[in-house]
Image (cartoon, rainbow, N blue to C red; front, side, top):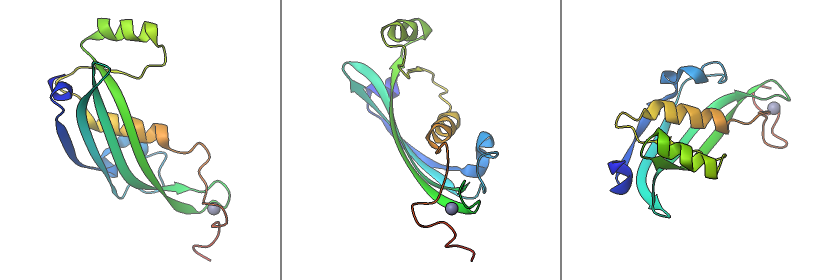
Length: 135
Ligand SMILES: [Zn+2]
């Protein structure tokens, strides 16, 4: 909470290999995720802004060859003081994706969640690039 209000800034890197839930969906767990978390305020509410940058290996659904997919993710989460406040916010806006203030906020889990949400439902090469590698 203080982090958000003070507009603090934290950045670092996480190894893909440390994100267990990605293991089943990625062709390779080599590589890193660069992240940056910043605190701020929006409309008077404390928020956390999360930026992620990584490249993952996915399996193309069209040619069944692996390919590299770059992911750049920017998300902003309102931070509720506690579960009660979160409940009030969610009653106003059921789709609100907010966090509850937690001094032990788990950055790994947050990063992993956002990557899982951002992966394409049907991964495939960019138009016209199928079959160019490995032939
Ligand atoms: Zn392909």
